[in-house]
Length: 85
Image 1 (spheres, helix red, strand yellow):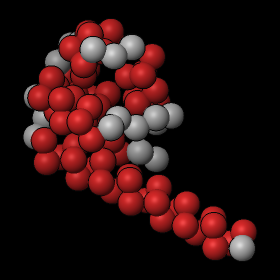
Image 2 (cartoon, helix red, strand yellow):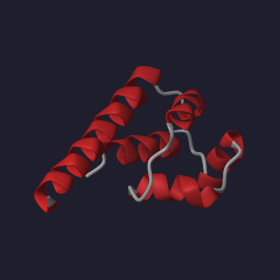
Image 3 (tube, helix red, strand yellow):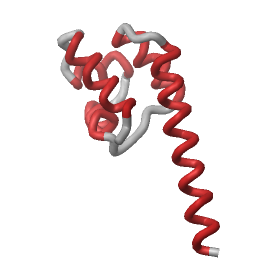
Image 4 (cartoon, one colour):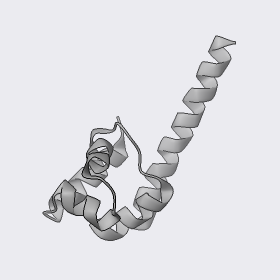
């Protein structure tokens, strides 16, 4: 389970913002923000930094979660590659 998706959703709800409002502030489509909250997609590093600013989160908090999820993704990719060799 993605911790980042929970952090994003909770922070947005705590600020009483709609997904659409977050998307407008980031200048992206609302469906992308929705996918982040569902764990179907991950924000880019630059989106992550802007998101922290918009939601009033510590940049470090989201960046650490972004890095953890990126490392897990890379690890699982390599693991699958080795298994399939």
